[in-house]
Length: 319
Ligand code: NDP
Image (tube, rainbow, N blue to C red):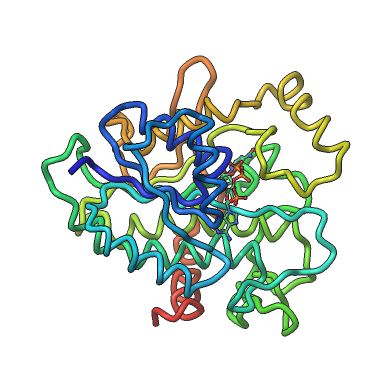
């Protein structure tokens, strides 16, 4: 059996293009873990991904039951697991009111962080069992991060900034219609909820590395693939923003990256032996390629990472 990578949100943007890049190596089978089966099938066909190099499995991250069902379906497929990529996300910068997941969590935190947190915890066993004879030095678990969750950068300092505060909102359940739907216990803000969720993604990778790297040998990584300003992530933004943002990123910040190039970068973090170090937040320099980037003080806060882990475990029913 070929090495297998599961990629969540592989029906568009970064996930789809990473699936394409991995499949193109001929060495990988990709499981596209998606909420919309027919969209994934159509997009894979449109991009010309060879039919025998992928399968599509249903996963709706807005429901913890769906996460558990997905894990069962994946195990029933009999495939080995060599790489797990938590890529899917929602970004709701113009939302005036919070939307709940099936479990009542605020949608960005519930989808981007909590559902992925459950998924990676459940599939850790499968990654540990990856056959040792593989083209990879070790199994890998990747959670896609973002510059916007890192306040040590210019982009990370555009308000509203990511800030998990004292985690009081998360401790109270980040439930819509109850106390606060925000992790820090504040008023709902869709853009901040997204940034907070990406900060959680990066804290989770560091905590995974601390807890499990030495005992399992799994490589845990995060990355900022560049600004994929034309991706579907910005679908709910204002029309003018959608026109100007890619131009701004292309010509002013020069941070723009195409979906195809971003997909190659993610595929590199999944499979390139040179990127096998665990606990790293990868970024790219247009001229020199991948490098180990610095993270903000909050991302590096080990105590916060530990508390985030414990509260998240409780909210998803693992503790
Ligand atoms: P897209 O919107 O193109 O991709 C997001 C994917 O997530 C889509 O395939 C979407 O599915 C899927 N998704 C959303 N909700 C759910 C759900 N409930 N269940 C299952 N899948 C779901 O955006 P990008 O490709 O740009 O984003 C991918 C990752 O890259 C995200 O983690 C994002 O935070 C990160 N990122 C993006 C940057 C950018 O500039 N765009 C910069 C830095 C990081 P569907 O196809 O059905 O809509």
